[in-house]
Length: 429
Image 1 (cartoon, rainbow, N blue to C red):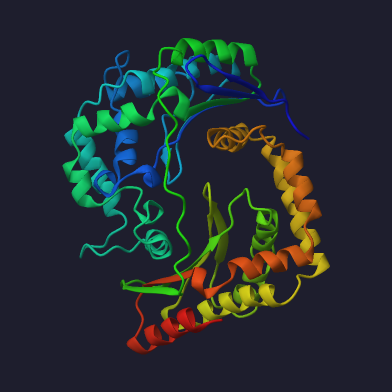
Image 2 (cartoon, one colour):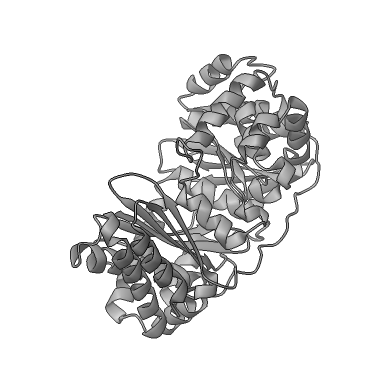
């Protein structure tokens, strides 16, 4: 199953990872930077995201956003980026013959930014921030509220986009300072995947990034302890449905029970026969759809269930989701459910080999956080194959605990239903 992996560290400390996938017809180049909301102080909250936006305002070689986007689009790619809590990532997907050009463009993007038009970009950032607030200025993004309840004042609990006051205050000097600290060779990984030549990618990387300052890898405050008591928030928001968000502090990928927690997730939500959809949607009609997921972070994770339903059904949907979780904590999962989860996991692992972006993202993130050697896809499949029903039950016992939980409801509920939902969210054991 496993592709060959070539890993080289340049003289300035930049790690270059190449994953040849000769059967594909496009290549993906990604730059991973260890920067994001967990590396920020309260005064700098949102600055990583601000810098990401400002990088798109042009470089020395491409002095406007138009010229920069045109240069990227001439390669068949689209200029895009993603800033999260643990990292920022800049991907370009191109025809294989243009992989070297994509590497050069990424090097230009982060090495020689102009940081022009800050006031114009500030307005765009405020518009993006406004998407999470209603016309009263009340935050309605359940994801962000849940993480604040789980992580409190820790950087993992802060908004990736930062508070409005910060976005309105940041200067070009702030942007340059943050960029100079984090966009350095030893704090980044360049990864390419697809039908590419490893030697050519490394040569292009030396040309594009060889002059970059070495710098130092970023450090961060470890994830905090779980909140210690169940957390609950209700946000009154008019609409035809209410959003229900249940979040739990999960297990990091390095944990021995991480594979079992993934199996737990798939028993809950992996297909129409999985427990969440079949029991709550198909059999009880509590929602049209409901989903579960894991946001992996370097030293913890967020295990979450979210759905939308009619206002009157909110208490029943929340109680039903908790009931399913508690069942998995109390009773071993059936052999047929666990077998199905394993088969589907392996199928997805095989499918990743047909997705250069997915492979680049996976290996790039692992390399950024110092995994030596890089784990193989087959090793992950083998770990999942070895998971037992007892392992899943143990993972559930560690995760499904009220002191690790937060419930956020955004919608229109009567006072009585809010009280019932609060009781369900805070009194479960």
